Amino acid sequence: MSIWVGNTVSFLWDYLFMWILILGGVFFTFRMKFVQLTTFLEAFRLLGGREKLEELEVSEARKSKKRISSFQAFCLSASSRIGTGNVAGVGLAVATGGPGAIFWMWIMALVGGATGVVESTLSQIYKEKQPDGHFIGGPAFYFQKAFKSKIPSIIFCVLIAITYGLILNSVQTNTIAVSFEQYIPRLFIGIGLSVVVLFIIFGGVTRITKFASILMPFIILTYLMICIGVILLNMPQFLNAMGLIVRSAFGLEQAAGGAAGYAISVAVQTGLRRGLFSNEAGIGSVPIAAAAASATHPAKQGIIQGAGVFIDTIIINSATAFMIIMAGAHLLVDPATGQGYTGAVLVREAMVTWIGPLAAPFVNASIFLLAFTSLFGNYYYGETSIRYATKKSVFVDVYRIVVGGFVIFAALAPLGLVWDLADIFTGISVTMNIIALALLSQIVAKCLNDYKRQLKAFKKKKGKEPVFYDDLIGIDTPYWKRGR
Image 1: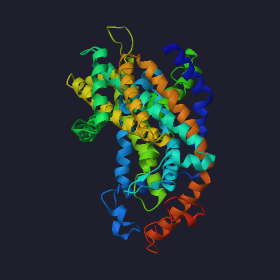
Image 2: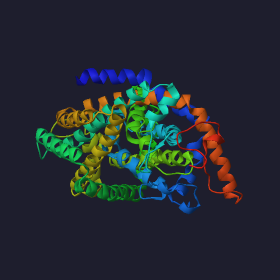
Image 3: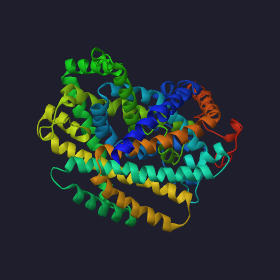
Image 4: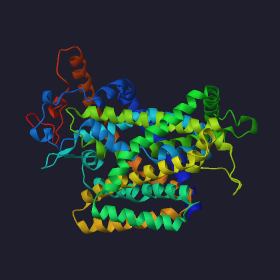
């Protein structure tokens, strides 16, 4: 099965997914006039919450406790996006695609930022307000506008439910199992995690997940500080690593052996696959969280989520990659197997090289918390999609049981198999989503132009904070009416 899935994912990414991802990102970059770059600083102004609620034209329901700010919506999406992909995913990218894969991961983030802006702006434009005052939205809602039918929306919801609740959660579980298999047999890890996951998703969010979600930002910040500290204290190695990444990206390191072309192909594909898994730009999950924000203009949340792609890939992923390459850990060989390290184990070995044996339990704990909290963020996307596709609660219960079963499967499965499955399903999701985004790109372009026009007047003190109404760009939406 691993061989068949591996061959399938290579074929699909060589001839379809890679080109959809690149061409889509380039198209949106030019169509939106490099919005991911021109609005980068604006994203941090919006995250700072400088707009005053009393100045916004919002309803009383949005002023209530049900209101979710742009910053809170950003954190909600980050809780799923920032995870094992930033640690184990980068380790896997370096091990399989070489240092050059990191360069193409950066390129994916630069063009993928535009895709992130488009999908989150659309999710805001077509979001719907619920009776209790909160908002829901995402691909299922704007798919109906793009394809003039509810059938593609239902198909995509089922796809998201499989991709996140089953396949991507398999990656999280497998990462935990690989990290701790030297202490606990994989079967026991799988059964234990399955019991905990089923207990929580059937009984609601408990103190365990709340504790983990509070501790996760601390773990991420500590991890980043260690990585940045290593880089600052070892600048010569940093410059050497940067040079190696660039040379490897274009096959210059392998040119002497006549393998430059193959090396470039592997580096590009691996970089794009791991970058997509990490920042999720275009998959269709982030818009679900983005739609929940109470913003005065759809473009605001789009701009914020576009910056999130940069933060995830350029900052966090790069920190991991440099720590690995600077230590030469990607060249180490496991004495027990005679093979090179990969995934989370590679990151652990790199950190041990820099700060000593105490790094191992820290990395293991970090991996566990990142993967554990991502399990429930991913499950949230899956259940939300199932509830949109069907109103019958029995399907939700069946889905929960299948999720628990996949946790056991993932703990026992080979590392390559679960990552290849993730690449297949994320590739399918991206293909469907980018087609819908392209069909609606003119609406997003008009929305962004309206925001820029109002923002320019606001900065010159000739107008108020940008506020959106659907008649400003000639469309009809469920929420953005005057007098709402």
